[in-house]
Length: 236
Image (cartoon, rainbow, N blue to C red):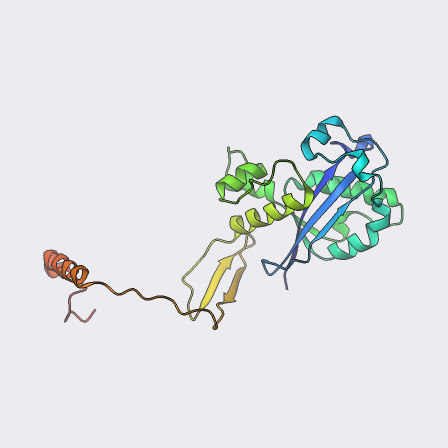
């Protein structure tokens, strides 16, 4: 079983080294590249003021966070949720840096995120796939036709949901003809996933050619002469 967690955070500012903290965590779970609905979302009290620049990005105010739990209050549940998963993060050093900072502040020997999870950075992936182009989340949404019209402000859970769609489209291209009612796709690690189409789905609609279309097809084959391989009696 392949378990991935698409993760995003919002923070009070840009640098944990300057005492900035996480104020929102959003996670979306994928198992075998399928959304499970077992998501994680939490707002956090940072015990410090939010920078004006950060407030303009996510719109989360100090007043809103007054009654929210602190990271230490949710650390056990959150880390149990992440344990052993592969994290999918856009610009991973930013989010992982803040998560590592929060874990170190606990001073209880938990280590850092990579002691518990592996990490995929979709920004690194996108730069390799689309060199010289914009590769922020909005640009990727446009490139992969993912609807992000509801993203007026950044939000951790919303951005994780959007990134999960982008990631699946970035890495889920069909790699071969599906046979025996199976669909195949390939991940970025080169592993081919096979999923069987449900046998109880509605039958496919069959549209037959009209008489006029058949006549036009026959006339076209005659024009091709002996080079045509699809004429009756050729054995093809």
